[in-house]
Amino acid sequence: MTRSPWLPLSVAKRRNNKQSDSCPNTGVRRANFFRRALGTSHFLLLLGCDITSDGSVGDPLSEPTADVLGDGQRLREVVGEPVWFSADNAESVNCESPSPALVKLSGQVVVAIDRFDETGEGALGNMYITDVYAEGEELLPYSGITVFAPSFSPPDLRLFEGDVVDTNGNLTEFLGPTVGKFGECKTLPEISGTMSLRFDGGGIYAKSLVEANGGATRWEPVLGYANARQSLGMLVRFEGVRIAGAPEENNGRYTAAIDMGAVSQDDQIYISNELFDLEADGPALADGAQFAAVTGVLTYFYGFKIAPRSIDDFEE
Picture 1 (cartoon, rainbow, N blue to C red):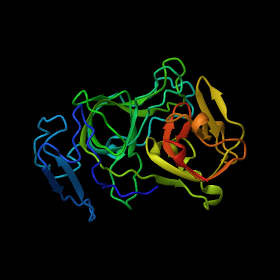
Picture 2 (cartoon, rainbow, N blue to C red):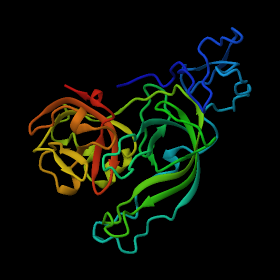
Picture 3 (cartoon, one colour):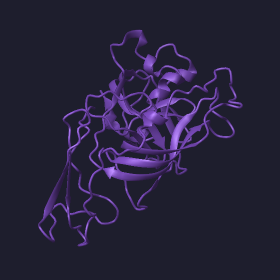
Picture 4 (cartoon, rainbow, N blue to C red):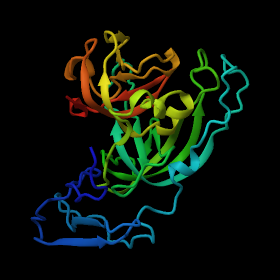
């Protein structure tokens, strides 16, 4: 699942006027080379036409900032250890979790977009972003997050996986619904605000969290709230996955438990259908089914889940 973070620019699909591949009105193409080394020799290549397919003038040329990823905050700088977690506070009463804070992020890549309404209640549209890293670099803890019900600048902007974005908004440590909080002062970090495009062609690659040959300790990186929280919102990869028990369906939510050995119910991780129709379009998840690896976004809502993006995230 590893790919270079700098890929050729895809065919532009922004706003309502798409750029033509061949620029038929002028036969002219331009190439802007932004050479920015992120501690490596990887460079970004942007290609585009001066004239859009409807004959209008495209976006004007602009000079890049000193840092191609912008001068905003990185996720790992604003999301951190949950020092307010309290195993003795079952009802999450008077938790000392932080108040919502305004953040200005830049240089994150969209790794997944929720386009599947599993409950039939409009539960889609969230985006999952992680800090951009060069290929081969390790994603640091707290480098991912959910962007909840984002707005866009300009308003008709359409974002896609692989787009590198800036996000201005409020960072919230969500304690859960008013009736039925998560408990123990556990929170889900999420951002609500406005997203804008920096450039497209950002690399998407999964962080290997669980190795097949890790022995009895291989689940430790995701065992318990404090550990698993470090990878929330990231695209992660579990190797050597075995299904434990029959899948369950509840109000459209379809999940299958992963065999993690003798762990508590709170620590149990499930494969979920948050990002695609897992039951209809995914592999059979019968008791005992095995996969060489499963990739997906690590999510949280009354427990941790790995949400594959499509059947391609399952390796037989």
